Image 1: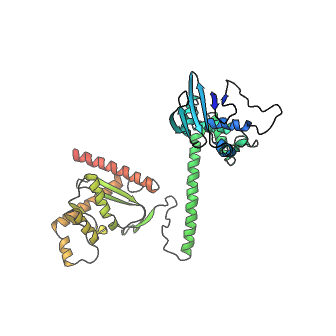
Image 2: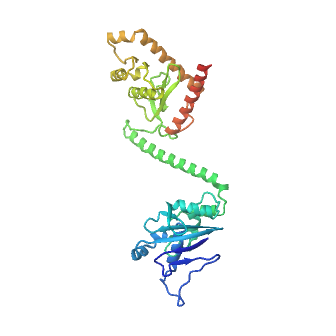
Image 3: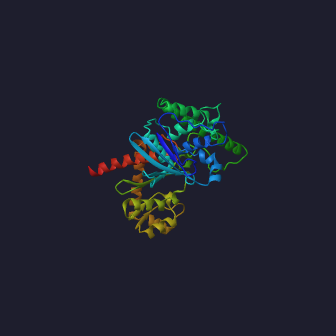
Length: 384
């Protein structure tokens, strides 16, 4: 229980409380403005509230910043604290003479009070229990027509939920509430996407065929159309995945991209990530023609790669033809073709042919699990 409050701004410096009901009364002629509401605000302040600061600003304006020292008794233990109007977001733990020992955030202080009062209710804070039902002139919860409301604009749902939590009945409906919230957010997301699709359709009808970031899937806004050049599937929808495979067939790096970045822009970053993973630059690099650029070949050699096997796109000079006909170049291209087999295997056996999740973050996790399974399988074969 609260035992005492001390402040040098009080007429009587020590306000002492007794067990049971304590009453704040006025004078014999029932005068107003003698401090009854202020005392109740101060008690709320001692219990971690901030209405004394925010709704009672004239106290600080007239008295200047001031400090309250107070103590609580829990069984045989008495705890001492202080809290001031200047840094009210912090509360100080004191010794028996109110000498500061440790300063903590007021949220930590109220959590301590909740523990000391042996309140075991879940999903509701100490302030939501105490402050909500502390009715004092000047606080927003004084409206007698809205007895459950904590502040003026609090939604009815939150007021009712707080009451349910107070009587420890929330756990039985929490799962349903979470499901409702999740479905509500999904519905809001779909409505937003449909609005974008309607606007997108309007632009197409007006003749605009080049819409940046156009939506191709209501269920996965980040999915993109990807041209892969295949006869039976000229365009596919989804996300581009980059894989880097070592000589042993272990995936050393992967990434899942937003949009459809050009392959040639990804090569150097992928080699550097492989370097980070294994600790040394590869001596040989093989990739398909989509990754080719003269800059890529030059940068790889500058990094220390001895042999770069990437077929050049388009018309090739005689020197280039001779370069690509070298034995090591063709060997590395055969190795790269073996990588296609690894991709096919992961599509068939690791679930990477079709994602069962939505969103870039979830897709990255989905791909990561598939690659982890593939690497474990590959390592088991190597060690067998």
